[in-house]
Amino acid sequence: MTEPGPAPAGTVEDVLGGWVRERRDPELIAARRRTAWAEYLSEPMPSRKSEEWRYTDLSDLDPSAFGPVGTEADPADSIEDLPPAVAELLGSERTRSAVMVQRNGAIVHVRLDPELAARGVEWAPIEDVASRQPEILEEHLFASEVGAWERKLWALHVAALSNGYVLHVPAGVVVPHPVHTIRYVDAEAALVSTHSLIVTGAGAEVTCIDEYVSPDLAAGTLSLNGVEIFGGRGAVVRYLALQRYGRGIRHFSMQHANTGRDSTLNGLNVTLGADLARCDVSSHLLGPGADSEMLALWFGDDDQHFDHHTLQNHAAPHAHSDLLYKGALTGTARGVFRGMIRVAEGAQLTDAYQTNRNLLLSDDAKATTLPSLEIAADDVRCSHGATVGQVDETQLFYLMSRGLTRPAAERLLVLGFFDEVLGRVPLDGVRDRIRAAIEQKIGLPS
Image 1 (tube, helix red, strand yellow):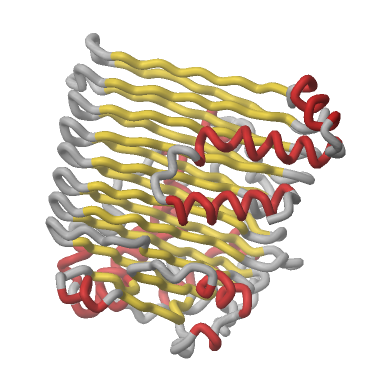
Image 2: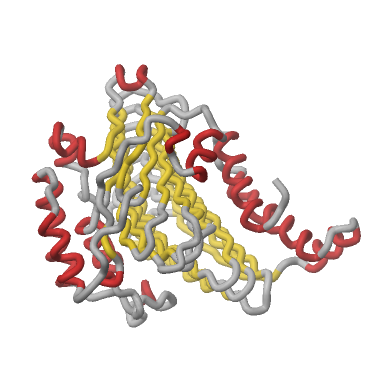
């Protein structure tokens, strides 16, 4: 088991600054960690005075209250050596081309199909790649354009990096089954920072699943996650993030997809867990013919707070993006969606859509939705829309007349509400896995 870092005591410089300086990293990581720490100290913490953070309050977030986790652990050679919750996840699905398990700061299990390794697929912890092949990381690691609204937390993520993976798929290689990463957190009062770097060559194809799980943590833990995707010409990348943390965790995920000429990115974020979850998703369409599908769904109950901030950044002409985000809330849960379609001056013939729909299952739940456009080109087709509504009483009456209780009928309607998103997930096994996780969260029998 990976233990948390030093017990939090003193200022953020005492707790985190000392940890950054004492690390013994490969030089590439060490240099970027030091640069990020300097930037973190110079940037203000996001506040509700900014439009991007108006509805999410970070005034009580004190990073010095969390101890950074280390990266050392004994490797787990078999499923039986892993925590029961992880072993169950691994045992439930066998059709994987690769799998990795990260427990707190340590990567404890890695497997890659030998045939893919023979074809040049790289699948390894970031630290390992930085030590033996730093040239793979020079161009791409922490290289994405980061928005002003996420710089503070991105800098903290890089400075406090626990570990993560590098997935490189060479040109023309099709990975037949998903590449699955399980990130399990059970360290109390810890700062866990993980990174996913996905780079594909021309014509490559891959599906990646990042799954986040934990028990409830009484002392509270801070989870930071960065994702960078670089799609080569004509490549197809499917990226899915399934966040099922227990209570007591605050989770911030910052995702950047960089799509080249004629490349395709299909992204899906499922948010079910944590006390507070903020997901910043930016799709940078950098080459003509780039295509980006951005999907998300969330279900919040009790006092959970979920915030989704998106950017469809059209920097090249003849590109297409389509966003569909749907959230359901009950109890006193809060949901926030802020989306931006940005079209550069030269990005003519842009085709972009943005839709957010919210379903409220209680009088005290609240959803805020803010779709927006910023267009500098004159030959484009862009649209956006948003809705917030209560559950349909007619549908409820119909289901209850067939013998269902009101809570059971509401849960069934929630699942139907999400089907519009789930129906666009191309892999049957992945879709069934996500549906089962939602059913478990909303209390439907599996």
